[in-house]
Amino acid sequence: MDFFEIVWILIIGGAFFLKLLNIFIRNEEHNEIFSTAAGHYKGNYSKGSFLNQPKFNCSINGMNLQAEKVNENKENFLNLSIEYSPSFKGNFLLEEETTISRLKNTVGLKDIQTGDTAFDATICISASHPSLVYAVFNSETRSQVIKIIRGSESFSIKNRSTVISYPFEDISSSQTLCKKIDLLVSTVEMITETGNLKKRLIQNIQTETLPVVIINNIKALTTKYPKDKESKQILKTTLGDRNISVQIEAARHLGKSGMKHLTTLLEEKEPMIAELRNKVVTLLGDNKYIPSRPILQEVYRNRAGLELQKTILKTFEKFENAKLEPFLIEQLANKETDLRHASIEALGTCGTIKAAEKIYILAKDSLNPFTKNTAQKAISKIQSRLGDVEKGWLSISDSPEKEGALSISKNSTEGALSLEAESKKKIKDNS
Image (cartoon, rainbow, N blue to C red; front, top):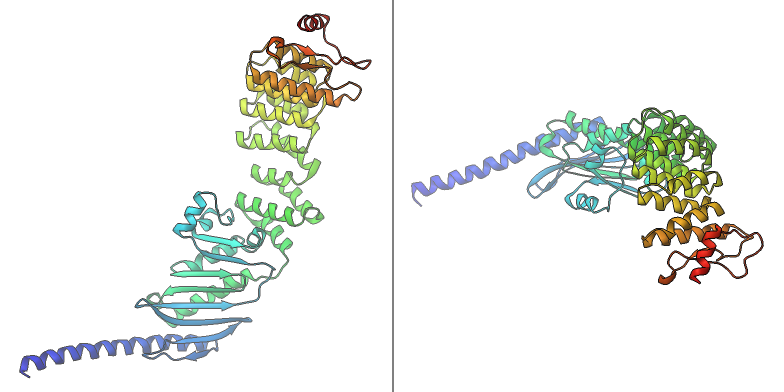
């Protein structure tokens, strides 16, 4: 072995020794971090070596915590895991939003959304019931969760445990490790805060500032406790919220008093955006809130575009109120085909013999087969509501040679409705 070979061996050996020394020094530094932190929390500490990594276990406020250094793919990480007792029945899981979960969101397979866009964009949420997520993760808790996952490599937050991993290069001292642990513990304490589900939902409705978050809590509250008096009182208070969407969601669960509030929203000088006005009008129809009829007619005539006018007519159809007949007959002369058809359909539930005659005349003069079909259905509905008139006394013939004609039952009962004499003559001529 010559001199140069000896030198080369010494260089390699020296490099290997320095590497081992560096590992030893680094491990001792990490051991010191874990040892000091374990002492701070009065935990059980296990010293690391070339074969094992340092770790410690401790109990903090009744929760079991483990801090451990792990090596994965030649990289070092700090793993924190904590177990605790859940405050509510049911399960939830918060994980990092991934490419796959984002793709699912784009095709409609969304995870649970709290309504906090920044939070929802970062975290993928699943749960046995959405109300559990809405109740537990209020604004303060969401903020804490964002803090603990900031800079993390991975995380999993469940109703009974949380596991979170950080690059170990970010853990420069025992103080840094303790800060991570303290933040995790305070977050878990928020998640496990005592208080029943209803109380948490009500508190969120009162304190949240994001409209969609409030709306989600209202939906959860009214689904879980639909007849609860305390919940109803909170909803009445919420009618004073500055956000119109929140007011609408609260009103829809308050029966007549809620519908009255929605009607007043339509009376405001500064109109709502079209989407919300349509929503309000639809709710008035679904709840058959007939006292809103005058303001709806006024909005239809003076402040409504075509889509809202169609929605109002659909609401009038749901009202089934005879007082709307004159207004609806007036709309049969509208130049918009969609509005004429919607008016015909509404007269099917609101109209009398007078409406039937008007509908018949309109259909007779129309070349539009859809108009004729819509008219026939409306006339049939009017007939079915008149108990003393035999069904079939008034109908539009389907035969091409009798297009526009009426068919009259041979045995019409006394007092049955009749058309103008001229119309009767046309019927006979076509027979």
